[in-house]
Image (cartoon, rainbow, N blue to C red; front, side, top):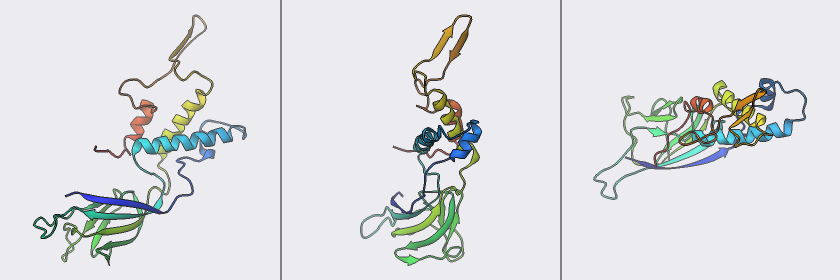
Length: 214
């Protein structure tokens, strides 16, 4: 059975940047503050591109997830129900409340949380997993990464480095050759490659990417 879900951010993060300015400057060995404004712009745009590619928000926020499991109309010959609930964000840092048909459920007694993947598992009277009943369900939780994973930060820094180095170069220039002086070539996405994501960056981010089924 499927379900409908509406997610509402109740406490938004102060920033959705995936890496700090100081971290970028240290990694790229940039001194002084002349480039700060430009680097902040790159951090914001690159972070947004990474989240869009991965189909998820990385920074921790407090979210209300409301679920409506699919079910047959009355007389409910196929009652419906769900094996487990998938929260909209993960990993789960803390869970404020879970209600089923407006009744509060007790963690550890009525349900368990698999925080790493954002699953809510309903428990029966013998503390064994059972399907969720086809009633409206609501969960308030704080989820996301309190600290952005190091490899995600590395992916963002690699993209920022490439964009910074290409700032004064024609973005569609593939190769430059001055015989006997210099020969250079640059990566440009073509065909089925990952848009503006270089292959090494896409390889890192694919570990965090949420598949989308059309």
